[in-house]
Length: 120
Image (tube, rainbow, N blue to C red; front, side, top):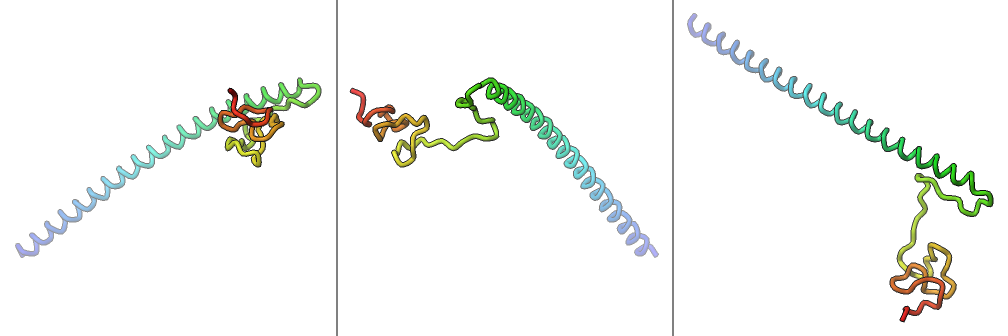
C-alpha cells in the first residue's frame, strides 16, 4: 500500500511539473505573439508614414508637370524611377543626351559634349 501511495504521489508531482512547464511555454508564446504584433503595428505605421510622404511628393511633382506648358520638362514620379547609366561607355548612351563627340558624358574625367579628350 505504501509503495502504491508513493507511486501515486510521484505521478501527481510529475503531472504538476508538466502542467507548470506547459503554462510557462504558453506564457512565453503569448508574450512572443504580443511582441510580434507590436512589431507589425510599428512596421505598418512606418510604412503608412513613408507612403504619405511619397504620395505628397508625387502630388507636388504632378503639380509641377501640370504647370509646364510645353511638356518638355516632365519629371518622373517617385515610383517611376528610370535606370541610370554610369559606366561611361558610348554604347550605354549618355544620361543627359549631350554626348556629341563620343566618349564624353558621364565617363570618368572626360566631361560631355566634345570629342572625349581629357580637359587640359
